[in-house]
Length: 435
Image 1 (cartoon, helix red, strand yellow):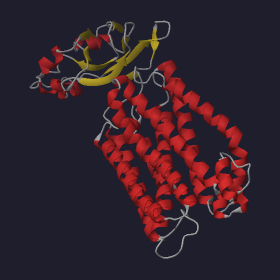
Image 2: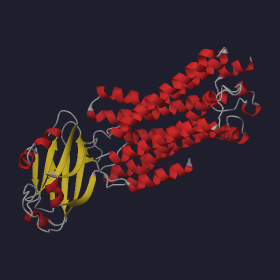
Image 3: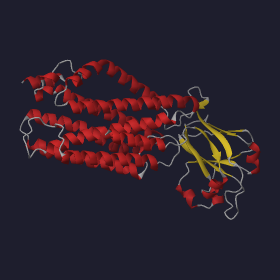
Image 4: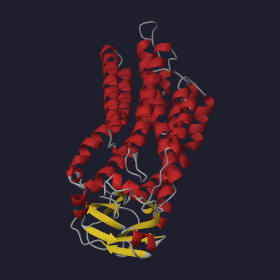
């Protein structure tokens, strides 16, 4: 597991790109000619007025010589790809000639949050037969602002990112309070060991990794709110910790469910859902983990936008395959658990399996369901709904599994885990355990 984690972090860090809404880079004539306009960035302005675009040049005289200009497109769609170069450039809502040190462009009032794309073009962009002179690249800094609460153009967050900073702050606060309350009793339970020791360790590690991801996202967005760039490394680390948490949980759930099922025919299972280290169950778990890890990395590489993003959006083929994998795994677990419950005579055991199924299905299906539900929301709300919803649902799933494996310790007759001081203990379950 740790070797896989190391491979994931190396691959993710190597894929870092320039990010942020304070975009720094160079305008390249050759790239603009090849693409009929060099793509610079995309930004979603809030409804109303007060939006601002600021472009600062390192060498204004070079911009004048090349007849450099910025093109602003509102809701640019794929129809532009079928137009000729000159027609495409003429479709821009705004054209900014780059001949001064600094250019300010106010975005007109709009009725709803709308995405604007910024392209660069110059005198050589549509001259296919000519040879581009060997001009030096034109350095630039592009600042994009939404109005803040006072109406001043100082907010670096685009409309689809607004509110995430506050969400991660509240999430970290909740993690901190829960840690203060439950850390000591949970540490004692882990220290004592028991049949569920490995499960509790993996579950705790996955929850801790989610907390690390939230912390990295908060640090990145806190810096982003001040300079529009943030700390791209922290943003990528947040995605990495979240991916490791995902594959850890998948490995644990598959090992528990598949291992118990594959071993049913060989020996009686008085203690259900034990971590069975058979070759078959290990192969199933590792196969699922590797498949999910590959899809997560592929989704990161396939993202075409240069700015930092959340993989929860699932805008690529890899993302869709990842959703399909989650649905397939949930169906597999549903089939396995149905066979177990249908042949189980003990009411207590059936209740245990159903509670375990709730935690599993919430973990696997929350992402596909939220993606389907997001179509009813506006464009600027979809990614926030998916991101916030997935994090909250998976946190609730972890709480359900904690309740299951800690509070039902008497079910396995393990005295070392039967203390009433254990965290997240359900009183109704303790009464059942004493029966």
